[in-house]
Image 1: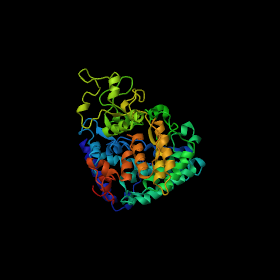
Image 2: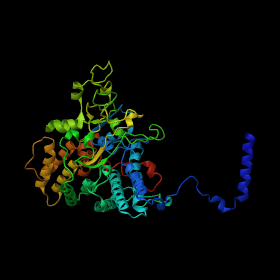
Image 3: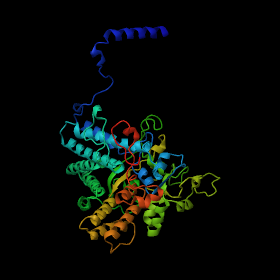
Image 4: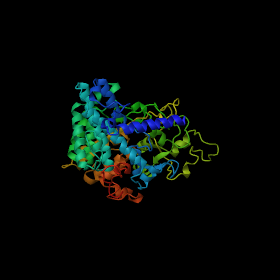
Length: 514
């Protein structure tokens, strides 16, 4: 065997010497790969498959750290606490909570990559498809919506980031930061283009309801305007969503995140999940169409008979949010947001025999940050996953509500209150519409700064644990006052660090303070 190997080496060496001066020998054609060509995408069906690839990165994927759009923001706010198995369990999450995030944080890197992967695929649909049909025209509008969404996630989290609207050639990979105002301008234009083409939600078939609609693009544009303090523009476009008649509030707050309300009357933009795993979830594949966030947030180490499966106990509700619900007499949204000690006293809990408290959390109270309240909006309901697949923890079908009609109403109220001249009467009407669903009395006589403070409080109670709070505090300039005791530093923590893995191989400049 060794003799044969030596002979091969000698032959290869002689061959190399004999043709080393021939440049053609060095110009090898890559085998085993198919170069991309728009000519291959010659039917609507093929183009749609590429578009679905862009949609795919709306979902959270597990690689080396869950890059949850909502959980990282919850933990950086005053809504959530990491808990899990303690400080040593997913320390990257504790870094967000304690404001010790560094550029090496793996969740930061995955959050970054998730959005750029989506942008890359959206750019293909927008720029590299030659087919001209009505269907492709809509696909390109959807891709612009997706590109706008992914870039919005990036600029609000990182500020000035890498920016391109056509995919880069290898010679262009050494990219630098682009000022976020330039990126915001492109986000706005993409959404305006999409609005002109996308159908209303009522025009979508049941099969197409998972895709972007005109209302979703308008609502996202309103949010983009609000984050830039373009209040008049935000009020106008959000008002259009409200008067469209396409949306309304779900009758019962407690049912918003139930299966029965997926893509329901309150859903403006929603990310679907399904019970399906392809590849080896814990191995090299690590791919699932299920919502792993549900498993992350479920009650640790135990199941609650007839209601919830066991979870991993991350992202518990901070006591200050429960205290706010109690102070405001807001029982509807309190119990629609979380479940705590009251539940565990009333139901039979599957717990070890030596669990003296019979609360279903044998060691939970010993864990750092444990508050007794788990979030309900991503609860691991029995029947919401597929026990026939492994791991079943990765098969939860709970969809993510990215923009709800209640968000449109409260953003509209804020825009009306903060624009010049203000329209506090209409703003208060929108606030009261949201409060009525929560079975709270209507407010009156509020205007100006007092009304704005009320809107801030309503947003926290309405969207508790949905990932909005941190971004709201940052854009309001309230981060130091609310989060200063946890380590929030003005001029630093309004944005997250750019991942060092990306900074180190480009001309990107790191954010100050990191």
